[in-house]
Length: 497
Image (spheres, rainbow, N blue to C red):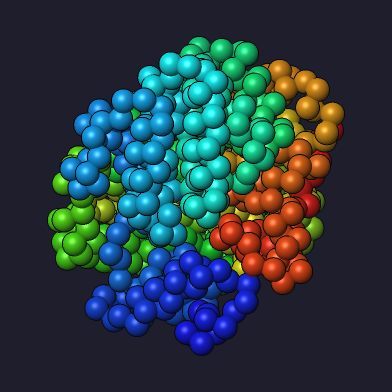
């Protein structure tokens, strides 16, 4: 991490980005929690990544407030009465967003916006103006593409106005997900969502039935594509770099029975320490207004056990050097991938996780989207390496073997040719089939778009161009996008024609 001088002299950082970096620098000077030396070694060697959470947790990594309470009761702490019209509703939400923390300092969940705003619509023209200004404000003030909102599964006027303004504004923030269920979501509304997705890289399509089966109706999609409980969130998200630890194995048997259990134990211990401190020592669950006023419930938080690099892990263990011949293309390599994830899930399930009462007293798996420093040798989660993707139907068939193991998030991204914009209903047919087959989360965009999806977040190619010219940009995630382009070739996905 850069030192204070490097941060304050970096001309590519805005003032706000400098403040965030300086705060993280200060937090990391603390040594209150004594982490296992073996864990520290694993961090240094790149076998485990703590995803920059900081040495001492003072808020959960991801927070998903129940904003419906704000609409119905207002907030005593924020001195807000329940809103009475569309202007008061959008204004109240914008005020509250300023006071919802996360690992990024910005809220990673903005609510089910269509459900929140639809009751306040009396005049469609006035509501569309209010919603447009609301979305514009979010893009300009919550400067981080991990800011995420939901719509659906039902068709609403508010949902349509959100989509209309999303397409008009062409902004990378907020990220947006449609909770999709063919029995609840009209074909017309789904086609509208697909059309806007092809134009703006959002909304993505989430498998509503699958998430409800795991979380019940009170679930959200936040940050990249993280499945969390409404009124709860994610305590912490470290990740195993499977691509790295596979290199330590002399055989598949050694990897499964010695190496993988060792790193699972290190991760579990680390997560236990952070969660115990957060709940028992930090002030968050004791005094934060979100907890005191019922927007959050500690029992609805989940520990997220992350991983990346399954593709490279399998190719290494199977001695495959050409990514076009291994994971995603060879059934034997794919079978190994499923066996690894099944075994990992069983290992994680054996550990009794603290303060996880509503999560079966265990941590839940998360296929992490990767970071810019991973490079081309560590594919996000369980994805096929970029540039080695097969035809779309083969990629979907491959993905559905893995998605059921990751309730806190996994997804695949498809890059489409411009001609798909003419037939969004055909894309909905593909998405419906994919989700019915077991895919959890489907994302797409057109190759010609300015707004594109990098891994789980969105950036604008025009902002990346500014960074290339050494100009500062508002969106924090644009820096990550530039790195992912240059180091992981994230802009080079196969174009589906």
